[in-house]
Image (cartoon, rainbow over the protein chains, first blue to last red):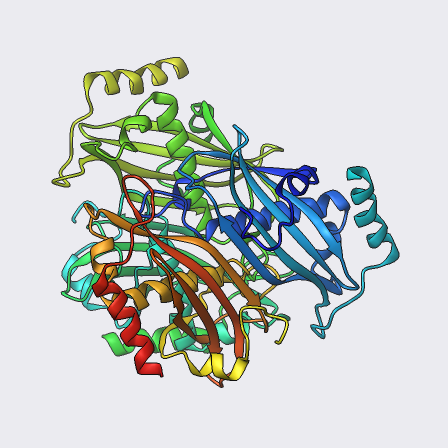
Length: 154
Length: 154
Length: 154
Length: 154
């Protein structure tokens, strides 16, 4: 796994994850090659990311119909390490690797119950104005919540 | 096909369709049984229904962020007559079988290029208030547009 | 709900359900009308049906690559009673209403945690030969398992 | 766009694309933030990649039930440059940036009809044995087909 350039050192990287969200591979998540379709881990990342943001207290405001800001995904990538099959139970881990002005670099890890890492990924999320589409800086409160979570890990 | 209770007489029923929308079975529409997953025809119905409403001029208002009304599906059913496979090209036909006060009974037919009927279906659509969730009667203009399309067929 | 023709009497019908499967409405299950997209309950039905068949011990053989039989859905319908929103937790109930030679009539009910019924449905499932596509009768063992489950309810 | 590290120089990179596949944003491709859900471009990439492989003559063998090899996605990434909305018509371009022993680095570009680039991406595809899961080298014929397409561009 040393060719994945966003992971400097796999052991330390893996240890830093705290938050995870459980998913089960649905029948409709498979394709005619009999394994998990490669587009599906991105929706697992999405679910896990949203639960992660809920745990920080951010999501609750973003989904209000009149919310002035929404989170958008600026980029997203996934490395598929093992084939995954129907009915497998996975833990999808999320962590904020770094936090910018209005953005954050989130990292992801999909793990089998036996500890096998099936896929890893990362992506930049940006808080934008739902009206103008421009980036909106994190509040001090939000930044503090991101940091506290980092502190717990350290 | 005489056991499908919403189709009285198949030949007349089939002839009444005018509007259709073309779809191609995507790879991700298949499942590990190597055929079209049974949930997918409902999204084909949805696409075809929306294009049908666009052809009537209804959809353009409904998708505006400040639209006072939206269409909702009250019920939906599908009879799967033939197995469908990856990469097949289908025509999805839609017609309004009957029009109520704030609702309409839409019928659907999925057909292969060679004329084979793969699946048929029907469902009630209701125009509701996006604020209260209550039914909102079709305007005279809307009713006229539904009827004109019927007149063309007669 | 008396206009739903596959439900004779709602209270008795509801009481007969035993098996259920829990789902949570994913963010990607919503659409731009901000509610659960109407195609999604059919994939909830699918997941619940598969788990139901696993509980009966049928699914384990069907998903083997060399299985001689597979289950296919002959028809499917859903009545949407309440709008459902992102992040709601639902129980999807399944029961076999009747069992034919190579088919079964399955009924479904989607319920909120507070007991609210959000949608109901039914559909015929048929066991077919994966080679010929023709119906394959249930074995005595399978029939017995269907019946035992009915007996428990009675 | 100079921070996207797999694109050295945008103009030359953009000019090299020849093959494209047309998609239309489906209603069910949107989410409650009213735009294209971020997992969907990956299924557009998949459709476009499959059509690209069909144009090379590879896909026809891979989808046969007894095919000894299948293509798998080793990694995948997408940079979202513009928000995309319901009903937009996009061209999804695909090219092989480089070809390895049993793998290829494919690049993607999603473009509006007016020429606007909405998202770009890349990913490694590997031809593996459907039995062992190990990489299977491209045949000389396959390599020739990849190269010919490159030659056309040069």
